[in-house]
Image (cartoon, rainbow, N blue to C red):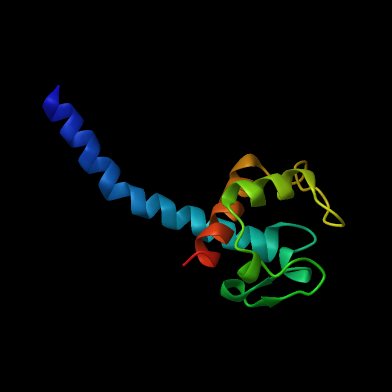
Length: 104
Protein backbone atom coordinates (compact mmCIF):
# COMPACT_ATOMS: atom_id res chain seq x y z
CA UNK A 1 0.00 0.00 0.00
CA UNK A 2 2.81 2.39 0.86
CA UNK A 3 4.58 1.58 -2.41
CA UNK A 4 1.38 2.27 -4.37
CA UNK A 5 0.93 5.63 -2.64
CA UNK A 6 4.55 6.52 -3.29
CA UNK A 7 4.28 5.60 -6.98
CA UNK A 8 1.06 7.59 -7.39
CA UNK A 9 2.68 10.60 -5.73
CA UNK A 10 5.71 10.39 -8.01
CA UNK A 11 3.46 10.09 -11.07
CA UNK A 12 1.39 13.09 -9.98
CA UNK A 13 4.49 15.19 -9.41
CA UNK A 14 5.96 14.18 -12.74
CA UNK A 15 2.84 14.80 -14.82
CA UNK A 16 1.29 17.68 -12.88
CA UNK A 17 3.39 20.46 -14.44
CA UNK A 18 2.83 19.06 -17.94
CA UNK A 19 -0.93 18.97 -17.46
CA UNK A 20 -0.88 22.45 -15.95
CA UNK A 21 1.12 23.77 -18.90
CA UNK A 22 -1.32 22.19 -21.34
CA UNK A 23 -4.23 23.80 -19.52
CA UNK A 24 -2.57 27.22 -19.63
CA UNK A 25 -1.84 26.80 -23.34
CA UNK A 26 -5.49 25.93 -23.95
CA UNK A 27 -6.56 28.92 -21.86
CA UNK A 28 -4.44 31.27 -23.93
CA UNK A 29 -5.85 29.76 -27.12
CA UNK A 30 -9.40 30.27 -25.83
CA UNK A 31 -8.58 33.88 -24.94
CA UNK A 32 -6.99 34.60 -28.32
CA UNK A 33 -8.99 32.50 -30.76
CA UNK A 34 -11.69 30.16 -29.54
CA UNK A 35 -14.05 32.54 -27.76
CA UNK A 36 -16.16 34.41 -30.30
CA UNK A 37 -15.95 37.33 -30.13
CA UNK A 38 -12.35 37.03 -29.00
CA UNK A 39 -11.54 38.18 -25.47
CA UNK A 40 -8.86 40.41 -27.01
CA UNK A 41 -11.49 42.66 -28.55
CA UNK A 42 -12.50 43.97 -25.13
CA UNK A 43 -9.77 43.12 -22.63
CA UNK A 44 -6.18 44.17 -22.10
CA UNK A 45 -3.93 41.28 -21.10
CA UNK A 46 -0.19 41.74 -21.57
CA UNK A 47 0.62 38.04 -21.81
CA UNK A 48 -1.80 37.70 -24.73
CA UNK A 49 -0.65 40.92 -26.39
CA UNK A 50 -4.16 42.36 -26.26
CA UNK A 51 -5.08 45.97 -25.66
CA UNK A 52 -8.88 46.04 -25.65
CA UNK A 53 -10.47 49.01 -23.92
CA UNK A 54 -14.14 48.06 -23.67
CA UNK A 55 -13.87 45.66 -20.74
CA UNK A 56 -11.64 45.83 -17.70
CA UNK A 57 -7.86 45.65 -17.97
CA UNK A 58 -7.25 42.15 -16.62
CA UNK A 59 -3.64 42.92 -15.68
CA UNK A 60 -4.90 45.61 -13.32
CA UNK A 61 -7.98 43.73 -12.09
CA UNK A 62 -6.08 40.49 -11.33
CA UNK A 63 -9.24 38.37 -11.11
CA UNK A 64 -9.34 34.94 -9.50
CA UNK A 65 -10.07 31.90 -11.63
CA UNK A 66 -13.47 31.68 -9.96
CA UNK A 67 -14.31 35.29 -10.88
CA UNK A 68 -13.26 34.74 -14.49
CA UNK A 69 -15.17 31.48 -14.72
CA UNK A 70 -18.36 33.09 -13.40
CA UNK A 71 -18.05 36.05 -15.77
CA UNK A 72 -17.35 33.83 -18.79
CA UNK A 73 -20.23 31.47 -18.03
CA UNK A 74 -22.89 34.06 -17.26
CA UNK A 75 -21.62 37.33 -18.69
CA UNK A 76 -21.33 40.54 -16.70
CA UNK A 77 -22.29 44.07 -17.70
CA UNK A 78 -21.98 44.28 -21.48
CA UNK A 79 -19.85 41.13 -21.63
CA UNK A 80 -21.81 38.31 -23.25
CA UNK A 81 -22.17 34.89 -21.66
CA UNK A 82 -20.04 32.14 -23.18
CA UNK A 83 -21.53 29.29 -21.14
CA UNK A 84 -23.32 27.89 -24.18
CA UNK A 85 -20.49 28.32 -26.67
CA UNK A 86 -17.45 27.20 -24.65
CA UNK A 87 -17.02 23.86 -22.88
CA UNK A 88 -16.39 23.57 -19.15
CA UNK A 89 -12.83 22.57 -20.01
CA UNK A 90 -12.32 25.72 -22.10
CA UNK A 91 -13.86 27.95 -19.43
CA UNK A 92 -11.74 26.42 -16.70
CA UNK A 93 -8.61 26.74 -18.85
CA UNK A 94 -9.15 30.40 -19.73
CA UNK A 95 -9.98 31.20 -16.10
CA UNK A 96 -6.81 29.55 -14.81
CA UNK A 97 -4.74 31.12 -17.59
CA UNK A 98 -5.92 34.63 -16.73
CA UNK A 99 -5.42 34.08 -13.00
CA UNK A 100 -1.96 32.65 -13.62
CA UNK A 101 -0.63 35.42 -15.85
CA UNK A 102 -2.11 38.31 -13.87
CA UNK A 103 -0.91 37.15 -10.46
CA UNK A 104 2.77 36.52 -11.23
